[in-house]
Length: 357
Image (cartoon, rainbow, N blue to C red; front, side, top):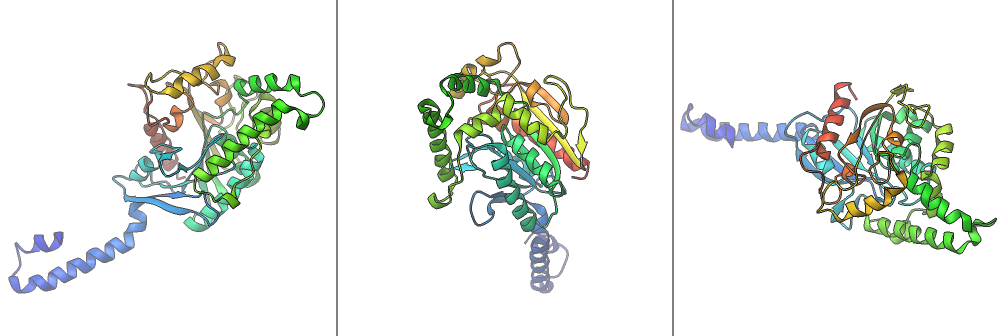
């Protein structure tokens, strides 16, 4: 239609039908042959039958058009889209799509250790490479998801182009240590017999099952949940055991800086924030003030310390973001006048693009 209007000023009326048909045909063919390349796409992999397209749009630039798809992994208690109303990575897939990214959000057991969750994630990564036709993916993991993606990179590096850990407790969380220490004195010799431990783990398991259902997983397909194993994995001791198996791009000391940024051909990155009360309008901030208490003077985001978050190339570990802000939760109520979470993700994906990932 645009071509027809243009040519009407310079050709005879007799030729208009022919030119109009030609221009329409060319336009349709162009749309058919370029739509796959010109549209950023967002897929939800939280189902038993592969990944489903959630949204698609033409990009406004090629700023985030990476060679390999972006795959996002949630943290403890996480989901993809909760009952179709709330995205775990709030608006971030859409923001990346505008720049040309193809984005997949994944769903693992909401509550379990990172080797169980990592194996689940690996199976989804294999599905994503089959669907996308790309041999590798760029992994982003928030919170515990940042540990899960390290598992995938460690056991199946051929599928991974890059790893970006976001506010992830790579060396454990002092909040988890506090909860663990509170429960263990009552644990005696038989953990399974301890009523308190069983009760806490049971509550976590229920939460995990509920988030599975909220993500669209049918009751019969609910993933394995284990609250106690999740707590152990996120503790300092649990993280140390995991790091002994998967040491790639990790610092050699708690508050040290990583000495390597590329291992087995995989680029490693991390970023995180500090501060808990970043928006007085966000009720979750006040909860993070409480959960951040066990850290004392150790700079933290309410659940993860800056020192524990470091992996590979540390982009920044002091953004004015609390733990939920770094996934643009809750409802995008983040610190005013500070680095906007969506922008931080866009810049990181552009960084991946610039090194041909």
